[in-house]
Image (cartoon, rainbow, N blue to C red; front, top):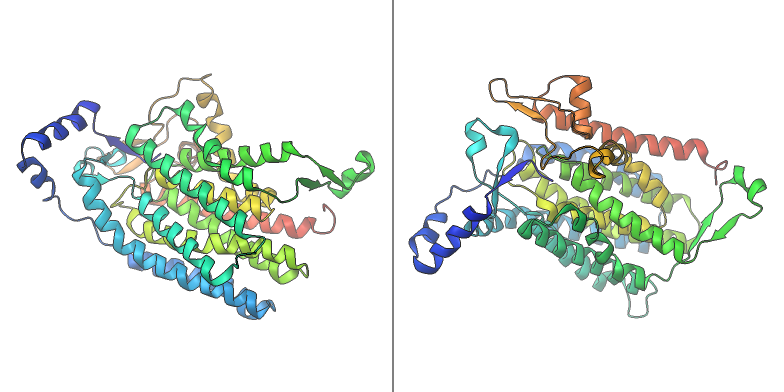
Length: 421
């Protein structure tokens, strides 16, 4: 949930009535100043972190030529998607501003930036470009009889469904109780089309006590898949509130997912196992590229708000990636900050403690610093323990913590390899 304040219902209805009677108010909306340009310097700096990923693909691992070719084709299409997204965001911003779909940045209230209309729901652009790229990629990689084609399209159907429901939420402002159900609905195409295994490998230390090495969960496994989709989408949505945090955490996790997949492809000799992780790469690369394009506008000071459209889209995409590539345990460790934020939020989300509309820190317009409140979020937790911070520095702290959690996951997998499973 972005740190924003929307127009009240009466304020949003009144302009619609005037549009039906006069043309001038509508034309006045078109005079809104254009949004700030993308922050190319930031993207250039972040692109340097892709060097380890490229090193793993081209030098460290001997990846089959056909598989590497597919990954590179997907990467090229993802880069094209990045530039299309950068180009389309300002265009979409003008349209949403015309329809009064904008907000004010609460964390800048009392300053001139706090009076600027910030277009909302720009995650819809990312979702559309992502879907176009991933659909077109089928032409280069899958054949009509491919075993992965059904699950690939089911995954895209779930992501498309979730993007649509997220945009509906942005427009209609759906209550929290309904929001919890939306990912369950969007995950149905994936759950119905899923034809993979429903077994789990028992950790080696527990095998002597359980008596079996592999356990078939049946329908319980599909229930777990649905719950994972619900958690991933809502956990990104509630770990938010400052410029760049929603997109930034997605960029960090998507980068970790890509490195993890290439490591698994390079270290394995099982062709089916490699295809499962390649499937993950085909979705993660477009996600990272389009998210970076949005990040160039959403980083502090934010020129656009991503909306629930983006948080739902990103969460569902990463859930689908983890489910179909069969590394949901690793994905949950990548989501460690989101898990901690959920645990901190649980008393308020459950109603045990009163939950305000916006669980945001307090902003001091005199100093430009944020102060933590008693609300149960990781944002406020960091401020209470680290002291007052500017919005930009706080976001950097949180994203560094996200990166540390991902590095911890890689370290944990390395230490437990051969002993745990």
